Length: 585
Ligand code: ATP
Ligand code: MG
View 1: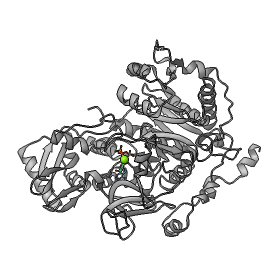
View 2: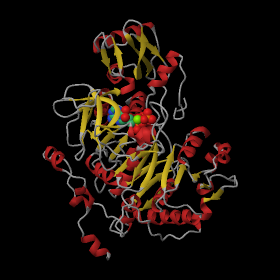
View 3: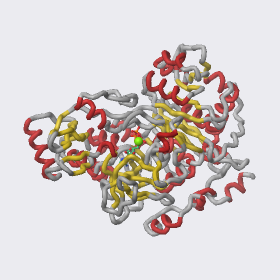
């Protein structure tokens, strides 16, 4: 097909139906996922491969010279890659991986900073039909070893500095045959070379930039993601190439991605948001995205939005709370008017944060809900729908969400219960790596049991209560920690709050809150009294915290989630359990 013919073909945007205020009800009633299949290109051999949908199909069409990736390095470097350039770079990696003997189905892990080569490698792995396993670059040796061991990884792509950090574990891993060391721009003068090591620059530099993508089927495995570890030991959720269907659809429906967007997802690929929405959703939609190697900084983030004219932004409640903590003077110094649509995921978004967003950005932040296991967004506040602050929103077309009682029967609206999804959505995980019992235990009576508790209102909006394990039973009342935390952070001095149930001989449990203050506030008896009063007026006396403890910060996972189980273990002097994903202070 020549270029002219290609241009005459309707763009995906013209073909696509998006839910909106008028058609949402009808679309949720009639939509079938197969309706979406024709918006993907599929492989010439009839298979499905995420790398083809995200890169090659654009590199072969009118978007070939459109920037796919705009990168800002931690030393101020700037690099831009078009879809065509991404195709060549990922082809080279695919050839290099094949050359050293890596093959379809092998687990290949990435332990890298957010550099362009991470993205080239990730899609190179997918092109040969291997399974990509991304890791947080801040991990120490133990979390890296545990995951590589569990997955039986055959290769690790890493940088010289990170290679040194985990040097002690490399020889402990018999299945690991190759350590591919990426020395970006010669950042490291003298990269160490162990017996399993090869230089990325050498093998990729020598490789051809032409490659025929492995004819993977939609059922073949593509990505393996360890969960955040908020409630316990992280589990290796495995996803199929088919997930791209829903990642593509939700990029359009929920993130509202459009042709000329400049999209920024602030999540690291070590967390599922950084792959499903920091790779698959934007690129399958052919949208340009910004990748920032550095971590959080309030003023730099606002500056990035201003300078790159970011239009769609996907972030997390923990980042929003950090921006709130830094105050409103900083954003007032920047022009943030390019922003059209802001989204958040990972934890409940406190109503206070929605209100704050309205003040600072002139628009609400849109909360949405999903999990590592679900692979893509399932419940959302949409751009076209009035946001109900504190609600996760409504289901996307093509899935069914239920609230179940303890026997896993569906409850009517208005009642608290287990949040569950009717099994069979495209981005559904397909196993926990080598843990079939654990996987099977999540499916009951045709439902996938999410482990969260929630309620549905009469209008079909879902409201998060808490993790099933975190819900507190005090004097016969069931209390969701989210409700208490959201009330506390409405107090002007409070930056964040974590709430647990503390065993009590009379009430069974009492509500205890851990509170971190905003900059400029100090713990005084007066503040303590004021906060207690504030909580009692906001919440009923049964729900208001019996105890409030002030802390400098709350323990969080690397994906930014408050680890209530750790607050509780520490409070009760119990073992801390798996803390491999605990963020450093
Ligand atoms: P682990 O399963 O290892 O304990 P995790 O559940 O935190 O870790 P993720 O898959 O990253 O791992 O997170 C999914 C969970 O995050 C959800 O089950 C829910 O508890 C929480 N979550 C995500 N988005 C939202 C949201 N919008 N509102 C409330 N909770 C959310
Ligand atoms: Mg979970």
